[in-house]
Amino acid sequence: MTLEHFLSFFAGIGLFLYGISAMGEGLEYAAGSKMKKILGALTKNKYLAVIMGAIVTALIQSSSATTVMVVGFVNAGLMNLSQAVGVIMGANIGTTVTSVLIALDLSSIAPIAIFCGVFLMLFVKKDIIKHLGKTIAGFGMLFWGLDTMSAAMVPLRDSEFFVYFMTNFSNPVVGIIIGILLTAIIQSSSASIGILQALAAQGLVPINFAIYILLGQNIGTCVTALLSTAGAKTNSKRTAIVHLLFNVIGTFIFLLITAFTPYTSLLESISDNVSVQISTAHIIFNVVSTLVMLPFSNWIIKMACILVPDKEPEETKLEFKFYDSHLLSTPPVAVEQIGKETVRMAYLARDNFNRAATALINNDISKTEKIESVEEVINFLNHEITRNLVKINALDLDYSDAKYIGRLFHVINDIERIGDHAINLSEAAVVRYNEKLAISDEAVAELETMRKCVLDLLDASITAFEKQELTVEEARRIETLETVSDNLKVRYQDAHLYRLNKEHCETRAGIMFVNTLVDFERVGDHSKNIAFAVRKKPGEKIGVDEEIVNSY
Image 1 (cartoon, rainbow, N blue to C red):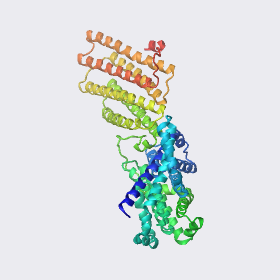
Image 2 (tube, rainbow, N blue to C red):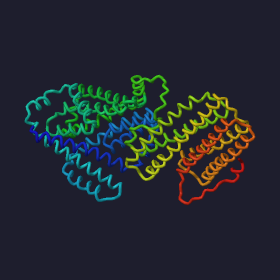
Image 3 (tube, one colour):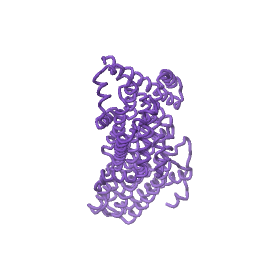
Image 4 (spheres, rainbow, N blue to C red):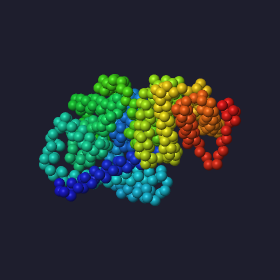
């Protein structure tokens, strides 16, 4: 092969890989938020999970990508191991679509597909048509690249060493190793099998050796998922191990079938086209492996649990509970899960506020360490949610998801400020306790009233944001509670001045009391912002409920 042939070969690989990627991305983005509904259809029924896994992989053209996505879902708690097993098995079936398309040899329509696809991408304004155009263009590039690769490999027919190696060396272990390495390097079983089919189409790889390479490629596709579990939770690692076990067990089964049955002869009898034979072998491997192992999926899960045992309990709180970076490949799900982290952050701030306010009122500092540790989690979530919101915002989101991301940007700032005010209250509690500052019974009662009012407001606001729904009645109640907190601050400041003039309290305690009222009132302000992030209509007058106002 000359330098020109090598360059053509690598150019063909580039077009081929980009074609697969573009075709998958186009279909995925065209599906948009429907992907969330597809995933929502996954129940504990493992047979339905197989179907869903096959459909999703057929759309995005990569079992590796599907498995990485599943690892992310398990890590985020969206899916359990039982569901994941079915999806992974289905993904292996879905990935056979590419090999079937290649076996059909549609390279003659590749130029037309590229032209039509690019035309739709450049000259049609509707997003869904643009995405479909990308899919069509990717389809054309896939076959154009395959054709370029095949043409570049023609000179290998004249290479005595290569021909001798492929026709006489049929060691199963070598074939499996070649398949594993090829797929691990390319990071796509669809692409590596396409290259194998291109080699076979030129008569360079006989079917008896291609079968072993194919088996290795099915194992090699697990590398991507295994790498994606670095730093992930235990169940995510088990998910990747399940994928590996499925393919390793399947490879062992088909090694026995190939060695002790006329399996190769059966494939050759189906078609004279080696590319078709490889595609058929790929389909048979994944379908038969799924049929054999799906009834024993619980045993596979148990094996994965043995290989990846539970860790000792750790108090590592600085981590996401619902969100995982792997979810970025499915934007609608990523949006939903980062929203759950934001709500979680809000409840942490709510509990910390109540904890700190109670500590101050009851003159009890036993929970100040807990308050500080939770504040660390709140700060961690504030930083990490913001960082990931920026990433998600750069994705192709539908209108409702984009608006929701905008609301999250605003809300996390209010939540973080509530956390800061909780720390202020906790510090005030420590000062009161250590310096033995005396607060009158009237002042304690006023602080307790303020705490209840602000806590009611905070609870109502978080609930509204969590539901992403705020009725006029709920909005009026929140507006009223916020007005009450403002009124209470002013009233209690006046009462404090009266007590100060009558020398009913110490100056140092009085300063702390006034500052505390400000913290309570500011928490109320931020709480209202959280609620009204859901409902913000220009010119809308909510009003207040006089009955609630009078009750304070």
